[in-house]
Image 1: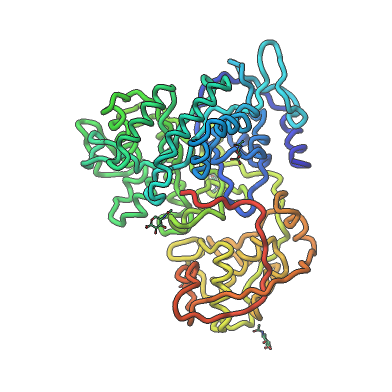
Image 2 (image 1 turned 180 degrees about the vertical axis):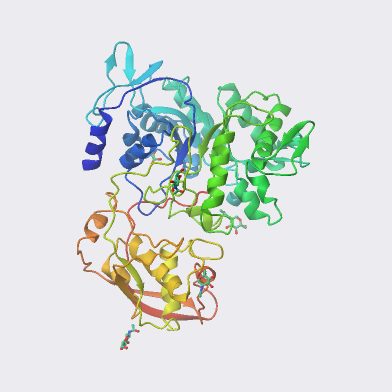
Length: 546
Ligand SMILES: *[C@@H]1O[C@H](CO)[C@@H](O)[C@H](O)[C@H]1NC(C)=O
Ligand SMILES: *[C@@H]1O[C@H](CO)[C@@H](O)[C@H](O)[C@H]1NC(C)=O
Ligand SMILES: *[C@@H]1O[C@H](CO)[C@@H](O)[C@H](O)[C@H]1NC(C)=O
Ligand SMILES: *[C@@H]1O[C@H](CO)[C@@H](O)[C@H](O)[C@H]1NC(C)=O
Ligand SMILES: *[C@@H]1O[C@H](CO)[C@@H](O)[C@H](O)[C@H]1NC(C)=O
């Protein structure tokens, strides 16, 4: 952790919290790390606390993250990636090792009251006894087994392993003496249930996984665990141009749906209650439900923007305490998501990298009151940036130069151009702007290496900010984990090795960047050779997550 942990520790000494086991109220947040330059965990933990966010949901159990959360009093749902389900399903031993390493090692096991007391937590690695209370290392309360494993895009890959893995993890938790303290769950997409009519009251589980769902629901219920569902009104709007936009939000919908006297004014409630009815149909009408992911992206699609995201998320915050017509009680929910992740797969759409309520650097995107922070979101502090410089198209370069197309497609394929396109934050750039955006994205993701701004006779480094209007030309942050690269790149470090890249690009490229982005092997190709640095990312990408 180095200096960051130290700095955080100083703040932690002034902080005192008592907590009783039991779910923390208030909104939670999903904290993913599929980013080329994730913010250091200690900075994120401070940001969570500054914003009064008392629970987080993770997609793995990275020890750096869990270490940063130690003693913070923040409740944690740790995750098991889908790729681990096969192993955990087939080996009781592997499940026990997973629990020992990723749960037991991080929490105190024998406490009823969990107390995090006044101390420099950086120095404190072991639980200590204090007047019968046990010092909290971590408030791990849930293990999320898999992540939306039954999505049709997975072609059934996880149908056979999710339930056995769930059973093995539950058994391992009980064996470790944590059965009462830590619950299992499986975050599922809302597509695991459906309704034969437009009404929630005809809700049932999806036919192809119906029996499996009933087994899982029974198992969760028998173990006092919750059903976790991810609900996405944005996707309703994205998938169906005729979807009534106002029904996606929590205000202004003029034609509510009447389900036998229950009035539905927003699709979230209708979706949630379809699940309630499906559960009720099989005798689980009082089972707890956790909304594992809820949110709205801000870029990458015409329906993904700051105004809609603010309206949706603030609307949800006003709604979360009221609940739904079938469950008019506070909803236990985790926002999706905390911070943008620029290395996520864009298979679901270009919006996928823009779900954060914060940008990649911990800057708030819009005003959002989470209840405790009426003054709006508090930005991350102590974030270290690379120097203020950008890579752009040389003023003298010709946009019709034959090298432009291949250069842009190379940059976009290796960096992030999801802010370009119709209705996006950089959708109004001219041709020069488009090219510069792509070049800069590549340059920043490569930690401003000089050689990452050497598109043949096309690019130049500038110190004047090319951002225009809503279109931000980012400056990358320094990360401690980028193998020393980030730390040195900003300070006149020049790479010694350059690699000759040979790749194929579409013939006669236009500047429609999206069209060519991941389309480099089309028929009718030319070979283009030029020199670009190869940068091996040392962390970040972990395969698709939807
Ligand atoms: C603990 O979790 C991490 C992160 O998800 C994973 O890489 C590791 O394999 C897990 N440890 C064990 C012993 O399963
Ligand atoms: C699912 O199956 C389709 C069609 O067979 C295939 O194109 C696709 O790559 C498969 N996806 C996965 C994740 O296996
Ligand atoms: C947030 O709201 C405050 C006042 O309510 C306003 O001054 C500020 O400009 C707003 N910030 C953003 C990012 O909209
Ligand atoms: C810039 O790129 C966007 C996204 O690919 C495209 O829609 C637009 O037409 C481009 N603009 C110009 C002037 O080439
Ligand atoms: C760059 O421009 C110079 C002078 O116009 C030319 O000789 C050279 O071949 C160009 N390089 C590339 C890679 O296009």
